[in-house]
Image (cartoon, rainbow, N blue to C red; front, side):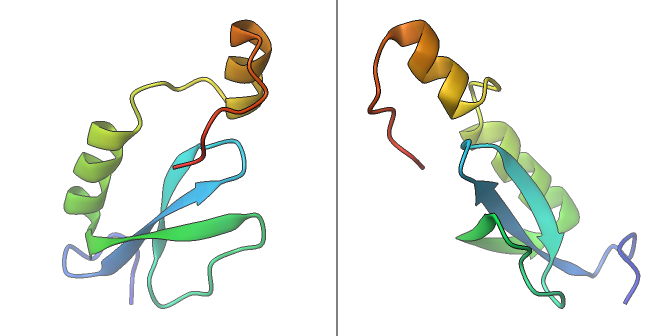
Length: 74
C-alpha cells in the first residue's frame, strides 16, 4: 500500500506535546504517539487535524507561557 494511494487508510495520532500527525493504518503507531480514534482517507484525516489542532504551540510551551502546569491533553 502506497502512502500516496488515495484509497489508503490513515490514523490521526497525537504526541505528549499535543501535536497531531497522520500515520498509515497498516503500520504500528510509533513510540511517543497515540491514536486519537479518528481514521479515514488521507484528505479526511488532514481535514480533521486542521479542525482540532487550533494551537500549534507545543503543550509545554503553552504551559510555560500561561503559567499553568495543567494544560489538558486532547
